[in-house]
Image: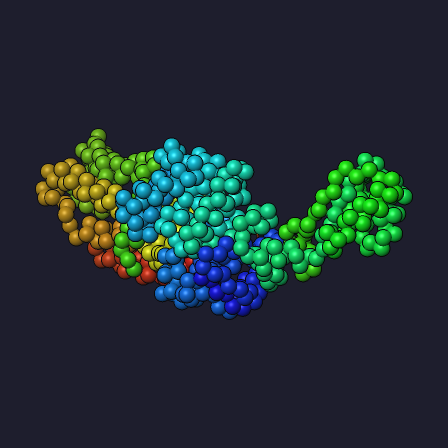
Length: 306
Length: 244
Ligand SMILES: Nc1ncnc2c1ncn2[C@@H]1O[C@H](COP(=O)(O)OP(=O)(O)OP(=O)(O)O)[C@@H](O)[C@H]1O
Ligand SMILES: [Mg+2]
């Protein structure tokens, strides 16, 4: 659905996006991650035909973003939640949405049905006739989400959609994204929320002007390598720590009453370590495995790019 | 350009204007002053000395009528600055530009939104002005002063001044983030027109049909230039990356 090839954007003096190449398939939730100023919003704007590219190619739904005729067709099939909600504060929630419904040539009955449905999903029923200017940030964000969905677009671009939402509303939005995916919609999601990304994204691209990594969340984590096992003891002594270290472990850390060990193959190695600790007089209370999470992978990948 | 889309944009702005009572009051107030207040000066001005002499009346009426040109330049100002800077500070142009609408359609819709109420108000005011002036002056002049050719050119000048005002406002909007300061800068365009009015009052220039036509020709050229720049300013790339 989205096909990007060597996409580059230069502003006077700044290269914001440099040689990005990736594709997003139909029905995919695609996460776009990167530090502040990495070029996420700039990329999204190019894909939504809002700004031009300096070089390279970007196709959305088979149409070329660089072509004026195609650009109108692309904009018919996409929905955008920009990083600033951009609502008309003087108008009510209903009037804001109705205006957009008209721009997409929906009939009055279609608009009414869709507006009421999405306001209900967002938990804003009953607020529809109040001016948006009096809404909280999160409520505005929800109206902006409803606005992007009204015309039933095939491809959705969300620039940090849950950033102002309370945990419950953020979950509503994540569930909604998964429901949209279930309907075969394609979702391009800019986010700084790594937990969100690993929960709902099929694939994740990490960028910092250039593309640093692109893969499924599981693969990105796996690329970090081994696992850590945490042994929590009733009390700790040098004798116990030394025994574990003597087992030729590369990496043994001690944090209060916990010994944290890098283990390549937990199923084979854990029993040995347990036996040694017990033999050295340690009382084991818990054993937990901590696999590296997306945050570790992200920090490593971004750190290495600098 | 698809007129339906243009109209949707304009209609949305009308809806916002209707909620801003201050804009409506200032337009109505100005029109009441020029269309009713100025004719009353004709009636009561110099009434102790027998009123304005018949021979002097035409020149006075003509310079009064020039107020409508000034109004036509000023009134779209407040409308256009709300319509454009309002969108800018609310950052609502980005999602709008992501819908299937062209930059020209938005620009046309915004221009109509500012021009239509201003033109309706000023033309209506001009009609009232002509009727009242005729009623007040026809016994003294012994003929109906309006309609006449000079007012026809004034009506044309009003249209051109309205266009100028809107084009100028689009240019200001790309640089300003504050409705009030934009209106103050915008009000500068009343200065040359006000100067014409004062010079006519001082009888330095007379607002003959020929002179008015010359002004119209100059304003028409200026309009074309201003709209050329306005159109090149109002482009999505410019708006999203260079409007400050
Ligand atoms: N209009 C502009 N003019 C000049 N430079 C710009 C402009 N817009 C963006 N940039 C630059 O492009 C780079 C990428 O910005 P962008 O907004 O795409 O980052 P981002 O990944 O969305 O960041 P964030 O996570 O903070 O939202 C930044 O260095 C920014 O300064
Ligand atoms: Mg951003």
